[in-house]
Length: 402
Image (cartoon, rainbow, N blue to C red; front, side, top):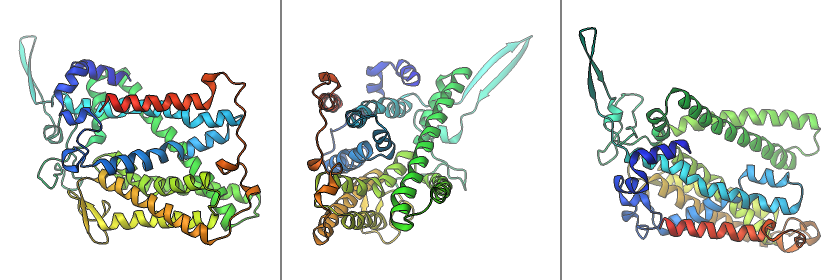
């Protein structure tokens, strides 16, 4: 928050920021009628369905940390408020995550400067040399450097590839003095570590109890499951390290995250949606849908490729049948295909398999679960009132940034 406020002050406030960056960076929905008129190369279907519905809802409602928090709540009313309360800071995140990147682009690019000083009759010349990646970057966002050649990487059009992952660190170095810089870096690392710890915990819990205990080795001892959980933690950390190395080839972490979400969150959201609101869904249908949804995401990734990328980790590792304007456009459409494949296969397989008795679905399916009594709560503590407030806030933000 201090970084954003200081950056806004130095760029001339909100009006100065709007004047220093292209107009497309300052709104959300304009230009999405076609990929060519959107700076990220994303059209209305990819943004609305891929991000707004599939990935957005999956991130909000099926995130393992949110689910674990809801399950640990003291009562049903508190559990229902968990995703609604979580929606409030998640709507504020763009101001702390996106604004530093826009500010870093809007600020002037540093140039080589020479300072002449005189001390005790001696004239000193001090030259501040700017690195090639800073000179070929934009604002405080440097160009991405090829680790092999040491030279800035170029896009297919010959322009330097910007390294947006360095936007926030460069903003910290540019604006913060030594003491506050240490505090800012500590906060950045703390957020990474807390997210890492929470996701590793969720990973070993889901693997050990939901998969291993239920399908691979039921009826084991607590000591056995504890050991499996510890090894799952080791495996999760190793997987995270591999993912970090893979992320180096992307020009920003968000492209990597959305790629992972299109493989994992998108099909998982379809399973949650059908499992919660359709009592005819079966376990066999859900399992087949998850496998098919993930396979559909992999197939889509292997057959498509962003225009400015080479076949490999960016896609096209089977063959290239379609080019997307950007990695993000590819991720959003991958999420759409994964969700749709899971949704359709889950329905088909569920209709072909035996459903569970309705008595066993109480508490799992919305229509068969008794609604908690909320009459004793004041109106502003009821989940319904909070849901309306969150909805109105989301609508207001979309209108303001239209």
